[in-house]
Image (tube, rainbow, N blue to C red; front, top):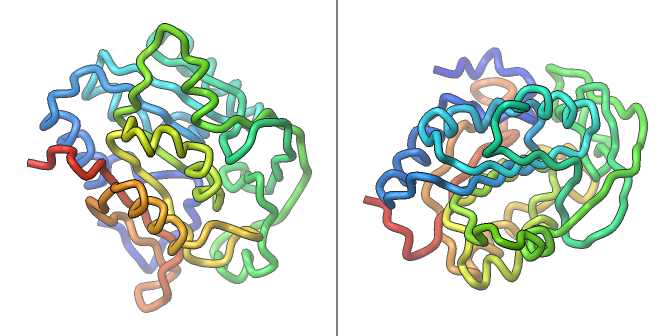
Length: 244
């Protein structure tokens, strides 16, 4: 059980062994998806996808990580897994080259700059900007369109994109319209962390507009038991996706 009184900042990690992971694995099995196509956007060091690879040895993984050191770590970590493809790029609402902000804690790197209130929001850790580097950015629609000869349906999409959730979803309009994504696991920031970070209302509205339903909310994080929510994880599914 998570000790809410001892939570430290965890902006770049979904809890890999949480009930969320177990529920998503169960959803895939209920729908008889034995070789899921998994997109891990904001893969960092590849911890999140490990349990899915254990449960689905035939899974295909597409990992996206813009920070070069983390990308190289992923390449080395999974160099013997031919079913995983790793890309040194970020996803957003348009294609091009943009600056990613490098922070003291690399798991907080983002295309967005830190909010002036970030250190106040996350008192248990130091949040400071260090540098900027230019990275390649694509939309998910553009990326999937370029996947000649490969499956176009995404069975599981994970978004851990540090406040850029709405922008990534904007870049996925074609896939959402055609309901080519079955399950979306998304980290949602509540506490002010990045300038112009995605609003919860916008994220929920996007899912509602494209007939995706909320399956569950997980891993609510607080600085202390009686404090305000800082962030949480959520799972959305296609409206007609089998749940039981």
